[in-house]
Image 1 (cartoon, rainbow, N blue to C red):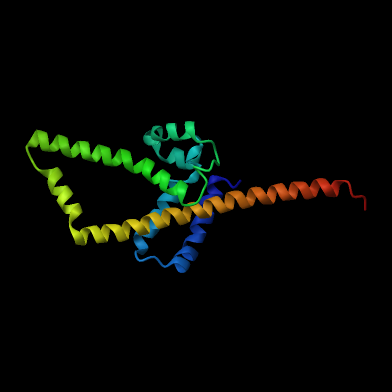
Image 2: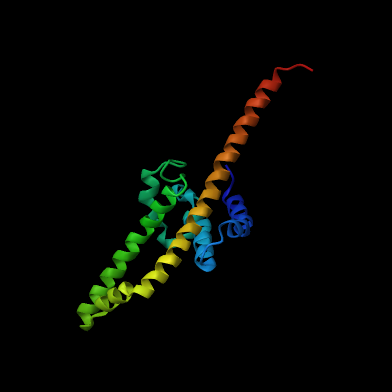
Length: 175
């Protein structure tokens, strides 16, 4: 299995290739999602000592439940598309809850209608379309970066196992 540094290097080298092949509508959201996944939302968040986990700094505690319930290289953590979306949901739900509660508190304390204003803004058709396109490209970037990570994880493991089997067979051959 490649190290965290190797995964990051592979992902950075593969980024221009991915951009050329996929040609997303929004390059910036795609690149942002790709880099966020490479450095912060890696499939290796199931390991407490991974570089991605350590990068969360004081917030790495949010990954403890994830690490407790999901073994390394499990279907949930290392399966293209599904694992990417699950990790995004895992991060987004607390952010949305904190944002929602903060807006409610601000409304109550300052007698504003900030929550209503925000909800109306999100419901605005043009804003909604822009958000959907950008969000789609961001998520696509996350998925592509994760897929590259996962493919290299499993291909390196496969090659190592194959090499070990070949070496064992060749040991017994006398030349």
